[in-house]
Length: 341
Image (cartoon, rainbow, N blue to C red; front, side, top):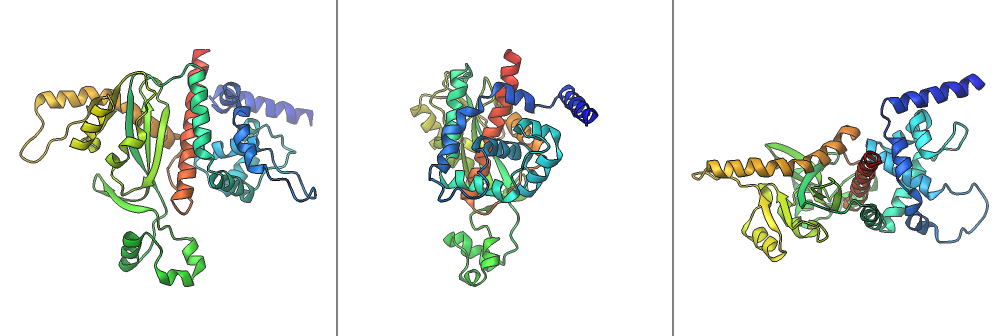
């Protein structure tokens, strides 16, 4: 038995040497910060003291952060907690401890969603960043990324009904099992000649720290420029904004002027009027800053392997994507705080 403990300790040291980011996250993040929100979902008194006590809400919250970082389903999350020593250590669990099952994980996320707590949790950590010296600086960048949802096998008529009314076709009401698996909120869109189905994660990132300062979730068909106003961060210390050409319009330029923000929006040539050499050089100069937002999406994709919704409906998609954005900020803070020493 003693040899077993030594072997686990050795394996944990090997994980640390290989660059496991989770211990660093535990060291620099004050998880108790989130308790006033996570515990609020259990404010109602239990009707009975019978049965096992509920899992600690900070434990459950950390499970959702892990799940977001690695884009795992609820079933896969339960299995990985049991299987991976690094996950158990991050969660403070030993081999003999109970592990929340997939249904419990799903239920806790649903409670956060129903309590509308994702935005407050995100805002709380943003204030924590400011208090610890990571205020939004050097301007801001806005962009959006498509998050795929399971593709629907609907008829053309069914799709047209969903598009026109935003509701499920009447005949689906007679088949509850089918209706439960149909996402009537996600939409189709085309990007770079590739067709996608799902949602969009719109974010605003500060240039200095590459932290997500604001975010919004829409269906994939919503044009990026329609979410401009929701994303602009008033607290950034520098009054400049970068974005790609999709955000460039007479309206957006007027809005930026009214908000007192200097625009750094990419130019786009049109048929009969290609970009001049000066405009192309301006695009290259702006792209060096704007690329920082691509690093954010790249980091989310790199650890998760893919960005796919396993939920139905925009309310649950907003919850999952919000958790993913918060998880990114937590890991980014872990890296920056560790580097600062």
